[in-house]
Image 1 (cartoon, helix red, strand yellow):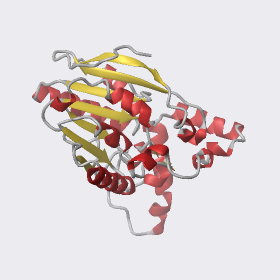
Image 2 (cartoon, helix red, strand yellow; image 1 turned 45 degrees about the vertical axis):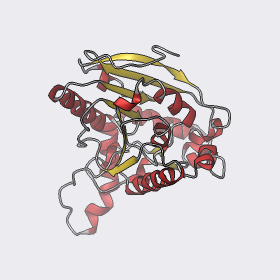
Image 3 (cartoon, rainbow, N blue to C red; image 1 turned 120 degrees about the horizontal axis):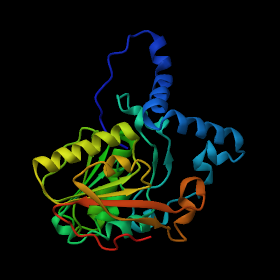
Image 4 (tube, rainbow, N blue to C red; image 1 turned 180 degrees about the horizontal axis):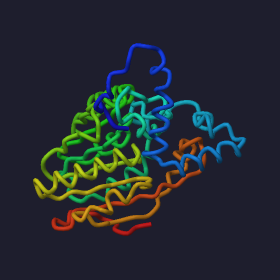
Length: 286
């Protein structure tokens, strides 16, 4: 997810352009987001399969709250497709949809950051804030979630308040409804967390923003990217180097809550700034 992108040109008041808007969004997503080849393959897979979870991912999810939510008194569960999260903004075609990262996976990856009190933790496309809640278990200097969809940003803010009330000693969680493509990164050492929240046009803008910010103010930075299908956006930044990569499996109690309830593992990649060598434990793990 992202947040509050710049608006498209004004749409005439006639009904025609309003009706074609979903088609325009789908076309832009196919051509410039996931790409026409990936879109065609997804359509073919959908036509071949009989599994209702292909078109209704919620059908495979267990009923009732996620165990993580029960433990912490929050609501980070459920699934939302990219079509359900449209804001009317220019970056709508590049939203990836929402399902929360496995808490145990987030915990292991965020736990690799050494000396967290030096860093601001920023989750771009934070959804309902599950990774933010996990990050609050560690003493980060700041914890910030950035989310484009109002529904999800509101849920993340409510979850942040719940965590603040239940665990007052933890770092405060800040949630901003904002566009990741134009979000201004905070000063000081930085951890960026991404759970494949958007497609390449926005990811490319995020990578460019990171490079510009680090050039203007050199400092340690770490990028943690789960399900890194757009890894090339960060591989192409000369200021970054890969520090760790591999795959992680969720715990048994989390496994049914993956996409459509299927068994799953998550690949991850972590980058760090070359000159400053921020600390990452468990390098090149798998």
